[in-house]
Length: 81
Image: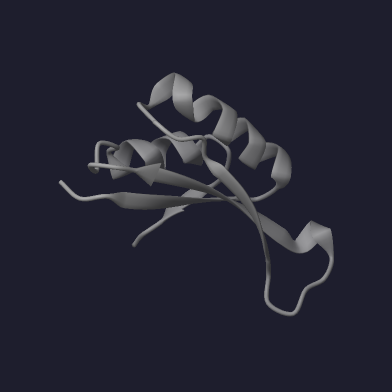
């Protein structure tokens, strides 16, 4: 198994914060997820920003398909590496 980083893309900050808070309840995460604002190209308006939740996965223990289903509840998706 290898060390992975999963990037979950969410439509807004509230959804990203909820996902980050809920990850530990459903998955064996060992580090606190990082929240990152990702402004869309050419946009300065906060309304046009996506939020990323970056999840470190030492040992590759997290199932990508389960992460996909989990983040879909917040209208988000997992970026494929």
